[in-house]
Each structure stands twice: as structure tokens, then as C-alpha cells.
Amino acid sequence: MAKSKIYPDARAALADIVADGMTIAVGGFGLCGIPEALITALRDSGRKNLTVASNNAGVDGYGLGLLLETRQIRKMISSYVGENREFERQYLSGSLEIEFCPQGTLAERMRAGGAGIPGFFTRTGVGTAVAEGKEHREFDGSTYILERGIRADVSLVKAWKGDTSGNLIYRKTARNFNPMAATCGRVTVAEVEVLVPTGELDPDQVHTPGIFVQRLVHNPSPLKRIEKRTIRNE
Image (tube, rainbow, N blue to C red; front, side, top):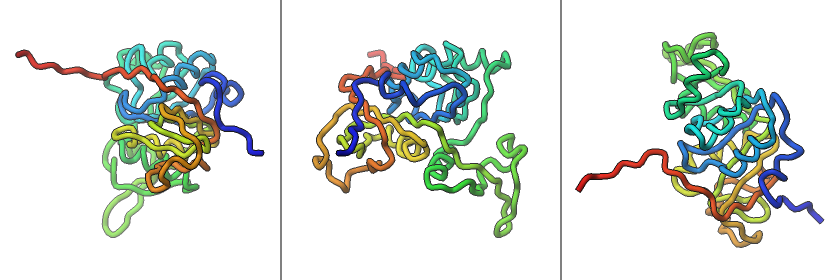
């Protein structure tokens, strides 16, 4: 009988797979589609000197901002960090390393890592600080730079619906980075809002096949914080 992928909570799902110095890929776009419970459990694990690959670094007091507050992140591989003052403080003080990466390139680096592709060439970033120290090559009269695929020790992702085999469906913006992050982890842990028995999902609607997911956490009532709220004065 196959071992169940379902764990009782986020802490149990991470207990024996996270360690100091690991590279962690985290899904989400802004505060949309981030694995809230898994990030909190990673903070509570006390693991440190982490390299985290994620589109952004959360905000102060929420998302990956929780790990910045506890100084558990040594390096961020991100495309946007403008919402986090703690990130700014640590970066300017020299205690946090940052590898800036354009959003499309970051998504492709995760996808490439999951597909077993060690690197690829792209025109994005040529002539900017992003290209410094990277191999340049000419193709069809244009200059490209070499970007390495990302292979994470552990990936943490968030899905709207999943089945007990680990097949996942994302909603809207949560689909931007979660599918790629899910493939690039040696071990992938998925946090799902709706958990159904295997066979209930339409195969044509599945975004991440269960073969990429080793562990599942059911979080039916996640805290959904709004990153920025703009209201109109009537």
C-alpha cells in the first residue's frame, strides 16, 4: 500500500526535511498564492542560513517577511522586494544577500530546474547589472546571457484544490509561480485549501501532476491578507 502524502499539519510536513543552509523555492505572487501555513512552520523550525527563491519577499510581518524578521534567510533570489522594510534594512546593512532576477527569467529558471535543464540563454537583462559575471553569447546577431536553472532542496507551494495523490489546481494569479516552484524541488510540499479524494479532479484541469508533490497539508481556512488596499472617497 502506498504511503499517504497527507500530513496532519505544516509543522509535521517539514519536520524531517528542512535543514540549515538549504535552498527553498516558495510559490506565490505578492501575497497571492503563498503557502502561509508552511512559511510559518518553516519559521518555527528555526532553520537558518537559508537561500530562498521566490518572486518576492513578502511584507513586514507576513509571508516571507516572517523569516526575515527572525534572520533565517541568508540570500534571496527574487524579482521584486519593494514592499518589505525589513528586507531593505538587512540588505543595506550587508546582512542579507540578494540575487535580483527578472520575473520571467525567474519563472523559467524554476521550470528549467524542474525539467532537468541546467541552464539557458535569454536576452532579458543584457546590458544591465543582471548580466554582470554571466556568460554572453551571440545568436542570430543578438547577445544573450546564460541563466542557470534552479534546483531547490525543498519547494513550498500553495494550491486552491488538490487530491490525495497530490494533483493540484491553482486559482488565477496563484498560478504565476507555484507550478514552476512545484517542479523544481527535490521534495515538494503543497498546502491546499480544498482536499478531495483521488479521481475527483478533472485531469484536464490539473496544473501540477501529483508525481511532483511528495507531501500535502490541508489548510481550509487560510488568512488572506490584502497586500495593498485602495479605497475611493465618495
